[in-house]
Image 1: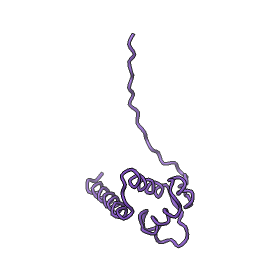
Image 2: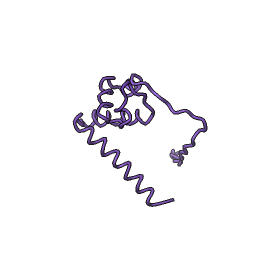
Image 3: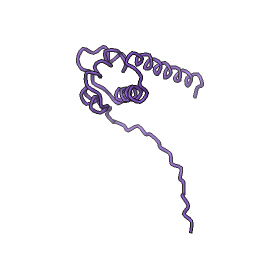
Image 4: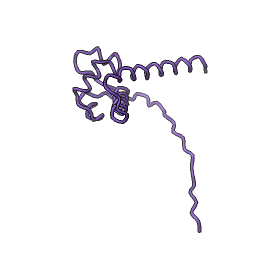
Length: 111
């Protein structure tokens, strides 16, 4: 008797939940979740790596899910591929430019 593996295709549909609140995290919580030192996170904020809104705050910024995602992506490239701190601003700028261009292409293609 042979065993057959049945493959099933499943799809994931994201549905916005009405009244859902966006998560917000303190600097210490984000540093813990991304496994970075809070001072390194403050350095990233001062350099504008996580966006201009985090660089402008005088007090410790409050992060959302997007900020946490960006931080984890930066740390992934820094740890996995050895990207230096000096090269990180260039890399982050390229990511933002790619996102802007992708949005422009979607707009030009239309509905």
